[in-house]
Length: 382
Image 1 (spheres, rainbow, N blue to C red):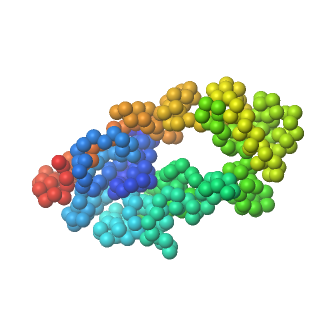
Image 2 (cartoon, rainbow, N blue to C red; image 1 turned 60 degrees about the horizontal axis):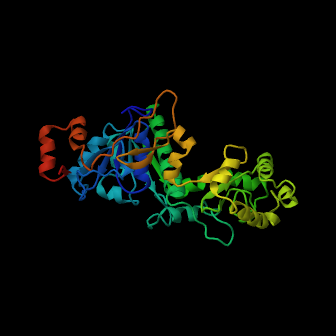
């Protein structure tokens, strides 16, 4: 692999959601990620829709067998990090807990991805993205008072509060280990990460008196700015001119500078419901293209609300080549960009188990041992 993380080896115990996404993110940036997957009916079949496996190598092991556990430990002997997303205690019961793995490789970074964390009263409870962000406080401002708080599925919790924090923790711990420190466990809980995401909002709340209620903050869904409005053709647009100079430009471009409600209503919560209603009527009077022509690219803090396939065709997004199609599956390129170490294009998605020979051979397994693993159904090859 090429990329800024070339030379870093990651073993991923594949699960669902944020763990595999974290592995994809690291693979996108050039890390050598080996996904250890469980036996399934799609062994060896193409799976272009599973974007989160792109750029990885795949080997299928039955981790219920002691011989498979020993294979994982051998693969970990020269790895920089491990990613796992099981419920607390599962890896320990498999014989792959942190103590055993760190004994085999003292410099290993053991990355753990869960919703609730490794400890606490809810550590063993089932949950999903919106449960974690609901408890952490991150979902609180995703809606006006009286409406149901709702955020896009997986984005706020699984990815922003989970996978990205796990990736950051793993890389930070690898740096520590490589500078003479020891390996360690990274406990990345979505409730922790999504709560940490609130610190910018908490700063704003603290600076305005510490009122945590909805309907009183300029950044929550009660304010008319930061809102999405429906246009006459059914399309949607979003405006967010929070600063006075940007607000003034929006009002001028909309021809509303003579209306006292708009000139004094930016920071007056008593006027927000009325302004929302007025903006709703105004933007519903013209198609989305009209508002794009009037406001896009200005300091009005404006953008159309686009579906991913529409976003792929937008001139700005197309200029940055953000969306790409691989095997006719729409996906996004790696991010962020680097000036010296260019990110590779989205890599191929391996069929489940397709890289068993390369993985085991590169790890120094003998031909005899590989044949024994196959004949005993420890490694699935077909």
